[in-house]
Image (tube, rainbow over all chains, first blue to last red):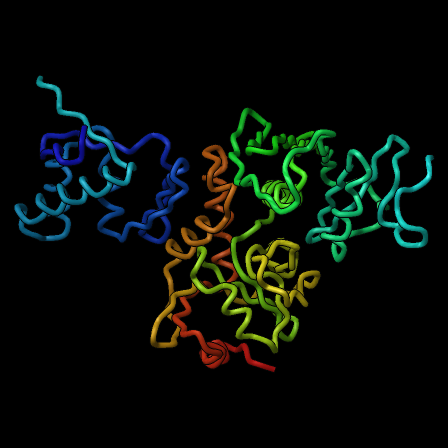
Length: 100
Length: 297
């Protein structure tokens, strides 16, 4: 899915080739094909933990809004922007949620 | 054994193998790389280039690399075919491919091969040796880091940064310190901590290479940031680990080793302080390094 098409119903999952590790509450992502490394701050790391191939962007936004006490609409916008950013960097992929 | 190809009286560090080849032994951070030069005719050129790192062939090398220059090598001595090598992994073998060279490294068997097809072959050999050194160091528990290294008072400081970040500048601004390298430093874990070693790998314009065969206890790692202000900034363990991974070329492009590389870089960052050094192009950064316990001596 192109980054611009991600919605709150998109199921989030890690790009399989990316290696990630949690270090002191931050997430280190290493993309082997690009040879690039990125560090996600604690909120970004929490997003990364939740993007497990089962949850949608909307699910993730609701959890983060609840855990951090932030207005849901704002978190949803932030999550979608973050998804587009990570997808553009090739570390996150999405699938449309299957009806059922 | 057939007569040596070396100059009389010159060289106990090369040895004719009796097969029209010459074996050179390089000592890189205590790891030994044997270069079996075929034909022997170009061994002198290689020996001259890596003279400070030649070692007596008194023990089996960690890796024996057969270096072959094709009989019909093409090109002129001033031409440059371009040496950037594509490195791919097939199982336990690393394959290297460039326009005028191809090679293979099989560390498990301690063997490597490089075939060169251009008269101006030294840059290709250098590229190959950088890849080989990175793989060997990693296999032996160490790291080759894209960095500058400086030695002062027996203590080594590492400066990491991509091309253009100022590694060579930091070296040039530090005449009081010995320079281990301005491009590629070898790190070995030892019982007393990590140790940084000089290497033969430099940016070509840098002529002062006084510390390239030296080593010292690694006491600080600095990520270079060019700035108007001069100061140190702390880094989280995650950020420090990530920066180190990003500067361990060759290994950071191998998907099967990434998790291990990240773990090793984390170990390094836990053992040695890693900070950002914001600096201008003047020696003033030594004042902030001095506040961390290191000084111009």
